Length: 282
Length: 316
Image 1 (tube, rainbow over the protein chains, first blue to last red):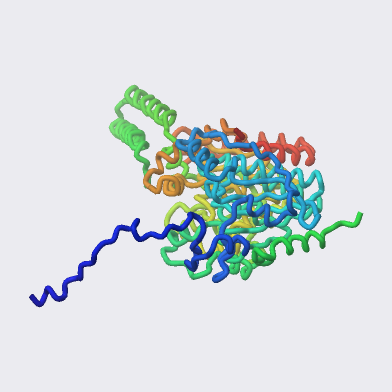
Image 2 (tube, rainbow over the protein chains, first blue to last red; image 1 turned 90 degrees about the horizontal axis):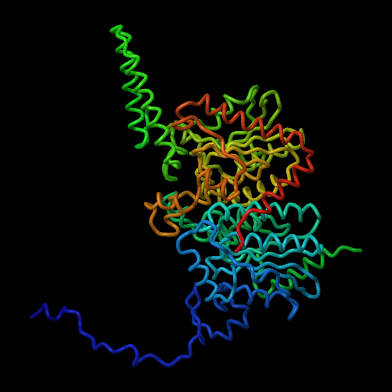
């Protein structure tokens, strides 16, 4: 038949496992943005930035601390603080336990002190793997304690923000962390001390609407999403697609909410320079 | 009444019947007072049993009732010599936020509140009480002005949330709210906030870092609207009723959790059933707390305010 001619050709199916090459897991990574296949060691050497498209891979808190602070200078604060389930929210404990297992962290922020080029700082770094680094009571408490310690010691404060926003499962107690951290920063500010806020991908919601936006100097990583309301919700509200680059770091700088965009290989050096400019003569 | 909630219907039907009976008795000059008294008692009991057993979702519905008194009503009923002050001096004037000066029981005060409309036209003009950054920055300007002239500030919170739109993001919604929180926490004048309807998320919190955070009996205050919570956590926006339960967003829950400082009684059936007595209850509470605060030195007030917010949260 003529029709037979147009029929889709049948192919022999080959079982996947026969063809798969034996690659040790984690040796290669695909870039989230440009799909480039990158050799893991190469990526790590390049500060976890894609050499082709400059995509900044999200970092774990530990990776960040290692990149920023002088080697072995970090002393962690409050590492054992964990969340309870104050509202008895269904499934919350399991969610925390799972995040603790996968990240090896107790909560979504790591705080402590260390030095950058010898300059002492108090540092807080959020880790988006932990329930999207949403801010519950413990995140708010650890950040507030870090601010208070920096105030006590008269150290500059650096917070690397990354967050999906408030932690729904703690209801209003979570929202109140915005007030708590902002109030602590008001005291820190009044004391004439330096606070550098670094916005990394993604910084949204209640964290954007509190401490992340209150830095004396606000730095962003290239391409980071920085928003109060996330793009998905805005698109649902206005019923149209958002333009390319909306709410990205470059857009935020253009609109006056970010002082500078600093790529990861220059971050430590930039922070050190700012710290040096703020050293007070005794 | 134009909009009746489901659980209000039997009460309102009964009330209408009583009204009819009264007119009938008057017209026909028949004495039906015994029946009327009995029916009135029944209506009263029905109201009590209904309103004592409201589930959180029903309270959310009362808080959102289109006829619920809004900031403009409370200003009209509580503030004398009110003058509205417009604009943030940076970009524009946000109609979703009202600000101004006047007197509360003779005391000069600054008043700041979200304004929701009561019909579609008003709501469009007021953007449904959802403020843009210029609304939060107008509030910030008026707060600083109040501090300068030693005027206490009264805040009325009534918003589903800060507006989630493009312009709001471009003009720094997050920064605007953050700045309000920081400045309020250290503002050198007494601050009293009353949640009079919806306390929706960060947009409501921006006016809530106060010495006294009070809620009306049927108001709610939540980390997000129940609908948003349901859609974020369970990917199902229709589970708002369950979310309202789980979030513990009622005034009674929040007093228990230590988030708020007091509950303001409402007339039976909710503030929308009787504006005047609703306003009287609000007035009495504001007056009590304001007088307490005016007795304290500003340093004590600031210390107590800091301590209160510093203690928020629950650590395992």
